Length: 162
Image (cartoon, rainbow, N blue to C red; front, top):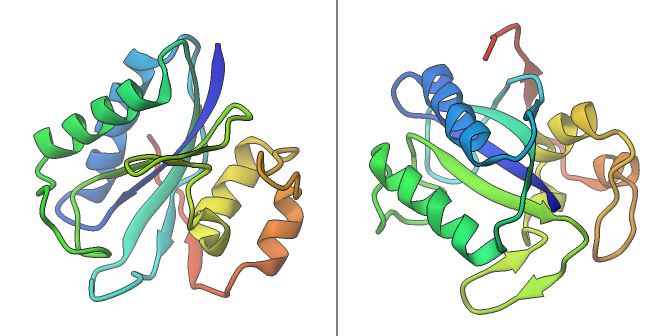
């Protein structure tokens, strides 16, 4: 069984509801109860103009990473995310595998740990909230150090509930 860190984001429509729907979906896939971070409001990266709601959940699964990411992509599409959107465009829901146990995978279709997570405080700060002892599977770098080294970004913790 693997511990999987999943980043969630939404900046279209009812962002809180999209995150809640995604958490319900992930709960169904998880072998144990999800660990859920606080929800954060984050300025968009790239051309999007509306702020994102971001969070991290930790799940456990017996599924291999490739079928799991396929289920994530199917869920995104079923919830209004277009397949052909340019990078950093607005989206109803985005689910990214940040880490999958201690696996390091690099194929044409799948990179784990997620290649950009170390630059994203909107992933690192919520992740630290649910797994304060987490370390990068590739480098062994502690979450605390990754946060210190990440580029600054406006990030605001909310009182929103799942």
